[in-house]
Image (cartoon, rainbow, N blue to C red):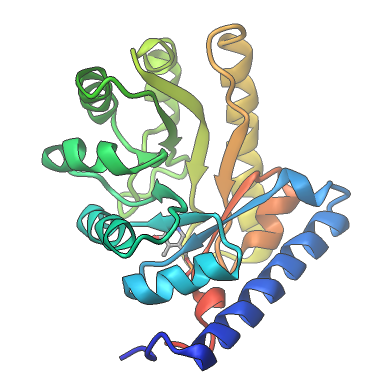
Length: 242
Ligand SMILES: *Cc1c(COP(=O)(O)O)cnc(C)c1O
């Protein structure tokens, strides 16, 4: 059970949001980076639409959801209640039969974890006459429990991904290994960044892979130090709420 979306809850969420903004800016400074280079995606999968709206009211402009159906329901709820829309980012596995409805509500799909899904998204985006941003979910540790496209496949498919009609390939998304220590996490994120740099070199003039979506509540510092431009923060935003 979470709290009702009352005034007191809004105060808590405001404080959490400001704290997270402060901590992310601090991590940027530590890494010698300009805080404007890093955008916080508020991951709202733990709460309902009303609390998600409170996070938006607190100042969060991008909401991340990992389940397509929940994303649609929240999108509809915002629309029905006349609340100004945040940007919606899909960050979890997207089943092919959910492509059509998801495309109609999202600004970015961060979790493109197969070439086949990318092609489906492109076909549907053409049908809907929309342009949609996407990131490729990469799995560089060959961890079978993680989703994502591996290094070799990405190398051979990069050009095809870049050419897909109505889709704009904007970069990579990655998750660090569960229970890894800080040095291992930093190393994994560094590998993702290197891969992005290599891909970018091969796609000059075709795609602008400016985004690196890496880092969550527990490892955003390591991610920012390794070049993250999007950090996906959930748990820390809902302190005192969950
Ligand atoms: C839940 C989730 C997050 C947020 O994780 P926290 O540890 O709660 O900050 C980030 N990315 C993805 C893909 C998620 O599913």
